Length: 312
Ligand code: 0K2
Ligand code: SF4
Image (cartoon, rainbow, N blue to C red; front, top):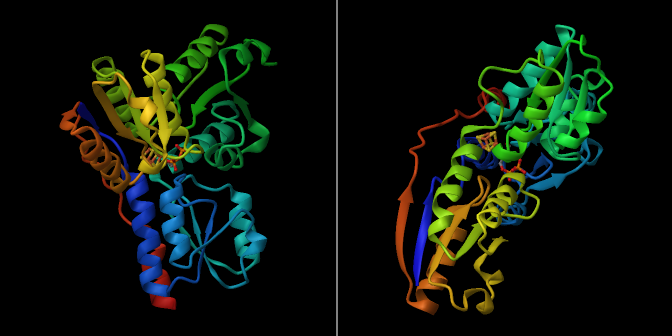
């Protein structure tokens, strides 16, 4: 058996920053720290921090007054920031700067009198945060079919934004439908699907044709990881999204010669290594890594960390 390791895979700059931020906060203040939602959508990462004593909450009211609350990589709405202020929480914002960029675009378009069509998945943490910036001025659109149902006229001032972790192909189909119906619709020049999402999808698209099976490391609630598995399926290969090597099933490998392995932006490299080790031990597999693009993106830790250090 041969393993192809897709590169880029795994942690992106935003996830690295968010995880380093929480590690640093624990080092500075001890583990009595609260995190609003999962720091990233990955079971392994969340369990690691839970074992260290961190508490993940879905509501600000769960956090004792005056405590430290860290916002996850997916960002939060202004309402959550207000609730935190009311509870006198000390907050650390680990939102990825590329998510913040979408928030700022939403604010800018809303102030400019535009109605925003946000392409994204209903109920996703990032979508809830972005919509919260201008709830009256944003409508969520998930599919090209929904574009036909929109109530806006040809002369309305419209703009579109997207969630950062969508399928480039699926989002493209929604954008095409929007542009066809509203040729004057505006959008930020560079788009919102981030470099890491794009690169991991491109790697699977390019490499899956060489494989008989695609394994993606990541959690079921991770949007970008799910999209990677779906690309494997779209290429016509059996594809599985798993958290750890313990989920591997012997029957998946019957008649399989080449396995492509990738990992979502929130999946740590250690779970990739466990899967590779398992395949090497079980099938005497050999491995080659295919780099389709170099990544050199790095985000600094949020400055509140230093400010809190001074005041605590
Ligand atoms: O892919 P998702 O947006 O569900 O989020 P994660 O799996 O946590 O990946 C990191 C991306 C966070 C923000 O874009
Ligand atoms: Fe930021 Fe993209 Fe990573 Fe999300 S997937 S945290 S937007 S770099």
